[in-house]
Image 1 (tube, rainbow, N blue to C red):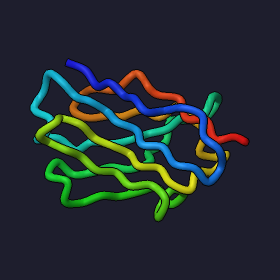
Image 2: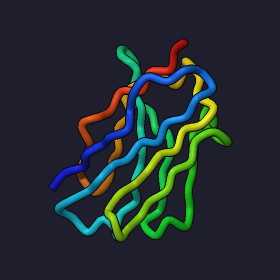
Image 3: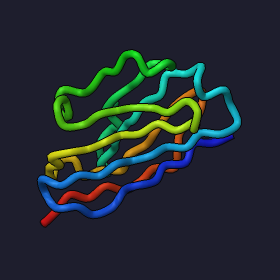
Amino acid sequence: VQLVESGGGLVQPGGSLRLSCAASGFTFSNYVMRWYRQVPGKERGLVAHITSDGGRTNYADSVKGRFTISRDNAKNTVYLQMNSLKPEDTAIYYCQGYTLWGQGTQVTVSS
């Protein structure tokens, strides 16, 4: 029973990354999924969430229009497409769903 993120890395300002979170051990299609991010010394904050059927999404104001959350229930995976990245998007990104948290993936936006 776990969530495993991937896709983080170093990208220049204005660039893009796609994060993935693969779920196992629970009925993925029954649960809302969320992406959070955390900078050292600050609280973990909600970035985006998506309903169980993918029909509704919501975003933090700071990422609206730049990030897109999506899911593939056949693959038990949730995604976070991040475009027009800014240095202030630098953080560890975590997916969350059911009672689980992933281990986190580092995203660094820097020239």
